[in-house]
Length: 74
Image (cartoon, rainbow, N blue to C red; front, top):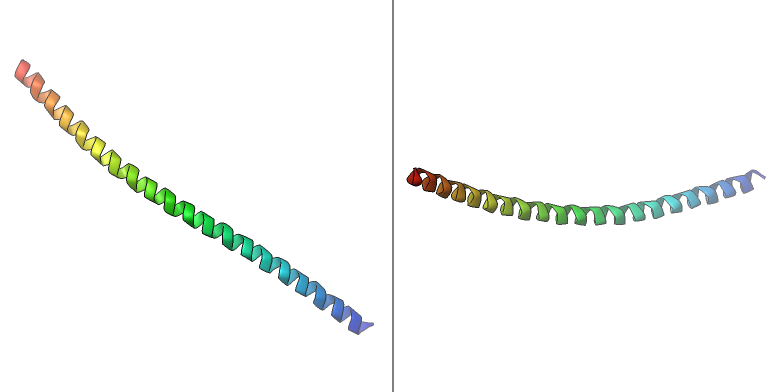
């Protein structure tokens, strides 16, 4: 009787191990997708920061031109 109990316990443990390995695989895939998403968002942030920098410089240039125009008009 004890042999059967040990055998069934071993089967249950193996089943649990298999479930955990499956969960690990799913989580690994999810983590890889999230890493790709992070890389994509990081690239987009860098693009937007570069664009913002260009826009700020353009704003400074226009503001400077407006100030010069106002000073020359007075």
